Length: 85
Length: 112
Figure 1 (cartoon, rainbow over the protein chains, first blue to last red):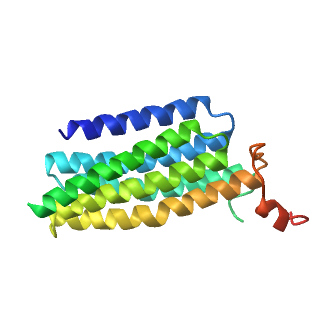
Figure 2 (cartoon, rainbow over the protein chains, first blue to last red; figure 1 turned 90 degrees about the vertical axis):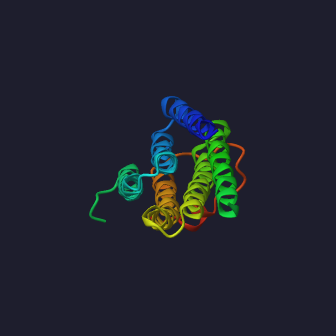
Figure 3 (cartoon, each protein chain N blue to C red; figure 1 turned 180 degrees about the vertical axis):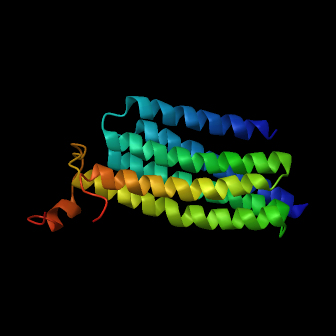
């Protein structure tokens, strides 16, 4: 039964990758990257639910925080400004 | 037993939220609409999923880590989305032609 959840999440990732390939402007791709980072946290949670191991949650926490840092850096880059400001 | 049922129900709701957010990411017309649909749905969906994991596992190592991860997702994901929207607006991405109002551009006329 729980494999259905994995398939639904995989279909969501496929939709995200479609938008990342088609997206007309660079911010579309940046948004998709942010969304993919959050979806990976969901994958880690499902894997922890299936296997019962808790180190998947360590991966999930660090993935969420690193995805945040990447989004902020890409946002500053899209703004055409330097990183100091 | 009750907490297992409640946890699995919340997990299924969260995964459906994720799916709806990604459908909005494909279907909506411009970058701001996509941002608001996808970010809100996917953030709440993943937070629901982690909270359901906490309900199933209780106050063990896994449950507490799931709670911490839910707090991290709930704080960082809207902040990153806000920064992305601000960056793309100041970077010169146009709104969809069906949009009726742009408060941010009105307030910042003349400001760099």
